[in-house]
Image 1 (cartoon, rainbow, N blue to C red):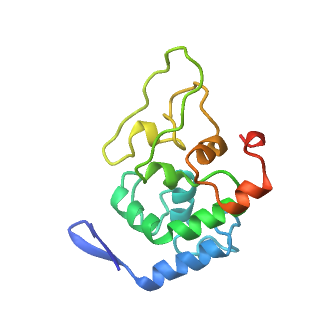
Image 2: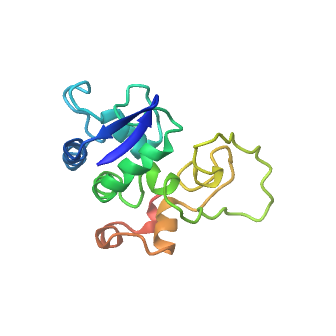
Image 3: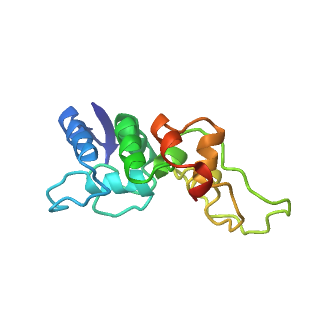
Length: 170
């Protein structure tokens, strides 16, 4: 059971909540919107873990900077979220895969030095090199595609390797 402090008191996420979130992911959420987003506890949290877009109506992750709870939920839901993501967007991964795990950045293409302004760094936010699907969030330089990155690091699932050639996916 995940425990976090909120305003000096412990807030618990029950095993039942985690299992309900897993079931929602297996049902295709956040790719398929539930009939009522108000009835699906954790819907906005799943959007955050999938895309990095934070909405102030989350049930568990209280702010964009709440890295501790994001890591806790990602750890519990990682496998289901990756499988769901691959099903809907092959040869890509959710935002949390890059932002909440310690992994190498995608390679920048081209030899010219980067002249883009650095992104904004805030406490609790993933490092800039991991903040935008494996590349700096403010950088406009060209980077290898997610598919090329996943292929280079041997992270594609067997189905992804069979179905779509990496060079056709951006």
